[in-house]
Length: 295
Image 1: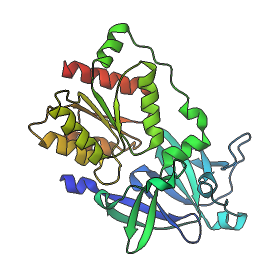
Image 2 (image 1 turned 180 degrees about the vertical axis):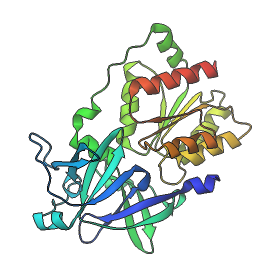
Image 3 (image 1 turned 180 degrees about the horizontal axis):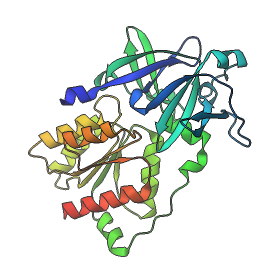
Image 4 (image 1 turned 30 degrees about the vertical axis):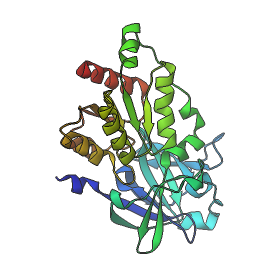
């Protein structure tokens, strides 16, 4: 499969209101269900409207409109709506939406980063112009962080002194378009007093890699998300591996996707490892493996 094929991603288009169109990558989606009565979930976030049974397990269902700050769906709208069961960051969650439109194929190069003016509370990771209609890609990591703020609590990390010193000797570059995901990784490294650089997209990261190499302190470890507007994690990895003069970093693709297919693609384009977000111990263990390779 070519790198271009890997950049073509399927997106599920849906509505939260009667007008604006939103999207979610299908690799995150397990199933789409018609709305059915839910079991109440006491003491939960206001946007969590209950639980649904999916393949024998209770899955929390979030009114996505309410979670992103729009008016919640009325009882009548709920009954006509759909529940998108998604697998994100090692957990299954149901998202209630007003209506599902269709699945399309989109090239990540055509996805534009959201304008900076949207602010840090915008639940959008990218914009796609679909025949004159603007589609907003939902930042599910930010959404889940708002609904489950305890998930952002820093994990307690225990490393030996030699391990900490090995990390501190590295030039680490983090790449993720999600502010929440970047914060999780940065918090883990900050605990250990480890220096790092951060980029918000693949193009910016590629420029930083080339710059640092020219300045004589090449990046040792590259930790990158996969789904990003413009230059995604697959193509960033491919471009790095294809740049022969560049001192090659140890590449870890770090993604909210749990799909085995995504991990296989990561190996095909030259990544050293691929991990599912977010486990600080797993990520740091991978970085330490990279430190051994870079030594």
